Amino acid sequence: MAMIQIHELSKRYGRLQVLDNLSLEVERGQCTAILGPNGAGKTTLVKSILGLVRPESGRITVDGEVVGTDPEYRRGIGYMPQIARYPENLTGREIIRMIRDLRGNPDGIDETLVTELRMEAELDKPFRTLSGGNRQKVSAVLAFLFHPDLLFLDEPTAGLDPVASSVLKDRILAERDAGRTIVLTSHVMAEVEELADTVVYLLDGRIHFQESVRDLIGGSGEQTLERAIARRITARVVA
Image 1 (tube, rainbow, N blue to C red):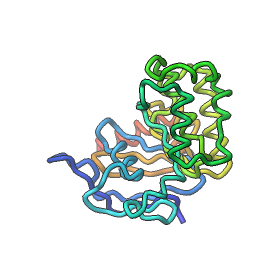
Image 2: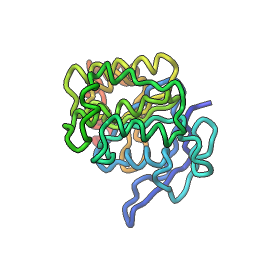
Image 3: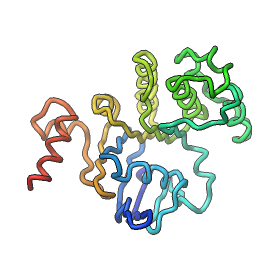
């Protein structure tokens, strides 16, 4: 059974139809990239799966649990938003402690990214004083903290330096290889090509195509994912 199953999902904001009868399955143990232009519905789709947005119609199940009936399913999800928003007066270490307390202070948490991202000193500074890159690192630590089976990563390397970006990408690949399911969004096609097994491309609230990265590049005659996607989109416009 797929990790995420979405059936005929629709959401509108006023007159704007953001998701239009969208159906999708995200396979377990893979890294799936959700791509599309600004306004295509990517963020609304992810927030609907997380239970942060309530669609007008449709059905979402995550690991067999219907979204909207019991928030307990979110305990198995790690979420790294594009913009980290946490209490500005708390230090990174206090934020981690707060999240642990909210989750019932579970045993066996994973703080290895603190060392790998060289965050020890930064965690003792108030969040408001951290640079954008260090805020992103705190967000990454929190996303992986509870050994989640499902990870949502929204532009995960945005604002990171090359070393930190490499560390985080290695971690994403390791989690995928360990059988965890990862959904990411990114505007960096080289990053998607490196990390993703499957690409889901949204356009006007619908799925324009869903295909493996290997097949998408191989069937296009192009050398890179970026050019393969551009060719696919251009072919549709010309047609």
